[in-house]
Length: 469
Image (cartoon, rainbow, N blue to C red):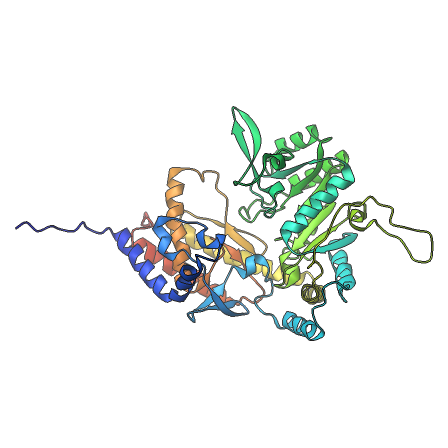
C-alpha cells in the first residue's frame, strides 16, 4: 500500500501559522467581539486592509481602559499606544487636567440649547493661538471642512475648489475624489460608489508640491472659490513643502482665491500656531480638531472675518443702529458647542498656553530621535523601509517606486510587522502613529526593542531576506 505524504509546509507558512495562533489566542476576546457583532454592527474598521493572508487576525483590539501612554484590552493585555486617538491625544490617555474639567462640567450638567458658559473664552484662546480673527465650532473634521468650503463659495461667488492628491478631508461627498487619466486627459472621479458625478464636477485634483499645479491654479483662477490643502499629509510625513505653500499663498491672494488649511492633524501639534506658524503661511480659513478637544468630539472653523461673517452676519452692537450686514449662508448643528467638548477644549488650550511652544519643541525632538534610531537600525539590517516624521507624527517615508513588484512584495512582508508588534504589546496606527507627552524614554526603548525582535523573528521565518554580509 502506497503511503501518501502531505505536502511540505514552507518556513513562511509555518511562521505565519505560529503568529496567527499566538496572536489570536492572546486577543481572543477582541476577535470574539468582532465575530459576535458582525451581523448587527456595520463597521468599516473591521474590514479595512482585508487580505486572506491575515484574515484570522483582522479585527480591532477592544480596549477596556487607558491611562497615559498605555491601553489595556478586554483580555487584560497591556499595550504602548501609538494610535493615540488617531492623533487626538497629544497628552496621552485620560490626562488629569482634562478629566477634572469634564468631571466639573458633568456636575453642572450637559445643557444643549443655551450658550455654553466657556465658549467665548475658548474662541478667544483659539484666536490668540492661531492668529485667526473669528471662530466657529462644529463636531467633526468633515463638518468643519464642509463649512469652510461653503464659506469660501459664499465669499467669492465661485463654485469650484482645488485640492491635492494624497490628502484626506473627511467623508464629505465633495472631497472624496481623485484624479484619473482617461484618453490622455485628466478627470476628477469619485473614490467610491454612492458619490454623484455632480459633486466631482466642481473639484480639481492637483499634484502636491508640483510647480505645474500652481500654473493650473493660475489658469483657472476665475473659477476657483478655494484651494484646500493638508499642509503635511499623514501618508507622506516626509513631504513638507514650505516653498510650495508660500508660493500657493501668494498666488491665491493675488487671484482672490480662498486658501483653506486643513489642520486637523497638524493644528496645535507641530506648533501652538499649527502648520501655518511653522511654515510662515497665514491661510484665509483653517479647520482644527483632534488635539483641541482633548479626546472629546469637536472641530473648529477659524478664519478672517471677511469669510467667517457669513455664519452670523458679522459684527454689530447693542444701543445703536448697527445690524448684521454680511451676506450669510447656512450653518447649524445640535451638538455644536457641546458643554463637555467646550470644557475639555478650555482645559487643553490653557494647558498649551501655560507650557508655550517648548511642549511641542521637546516632543518634536524626541520623535525625531526615535525615528533616527529606527532608521539607523533598518539601514544596518538592510530592511527596505525608511521612517520620517513631522513633529510628533511619524510613519513610512513616501517612495517614488512604490508601485514596483519588489516593493509590493516587501510591503506585504512588512504588513505583518504590525501584527508582530501588536503581539508584543505595541498598538500602532497602520505603519506609523503619534508620540504623546505621556510616552516615556522606557516606552520608546521598548518600542524599538519590539521592532528589532519582530524583524529577527520575521527573518527566521523567511519573510525578510537575510543580510548580505
